[in-house]
Image 1 (tube, protein in one colour):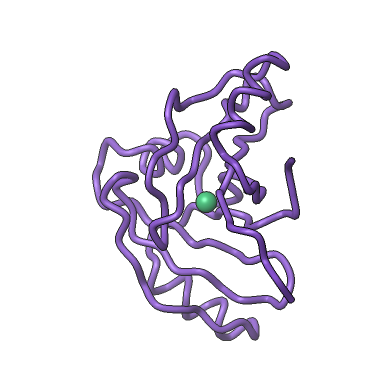
Image 2 (tube, rainbow, N blue to C red):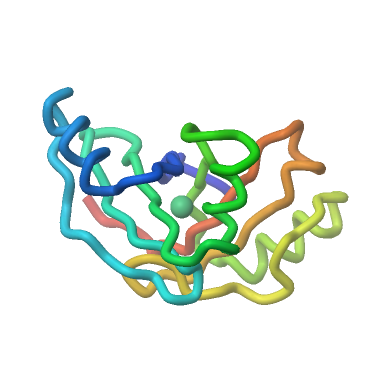
Length: 136
Ligand code: CO
């Protein structure tokens, strides 16, 4: 099962400057984290609803660097939670989605994530984030 919405990823050239800007906007950035598998430095903004993930590239040929080169700063992906990422990946592959990843990879906070190519999602890069069942 897909959902709820998990976060919106925004590609930025300078994470510290972006954190400062969003702090002025009224949102508090969490701790800065480096995700080696993605080649990014990132911080989440807590909104009380859908989180915002600010992404800065650590490598000149990384996905975020290439995105910035062609599209400039802005919304990079939209992420949705799922409780069983492997099952969802299989379901979406069967439903005709083009997955960027064959296997889940390690994302921020050690969560398992996978991406769906924008070609098969009307121009939007979709991310799946595995989250255990939440009890409230
Ligand atoms: Co993300």
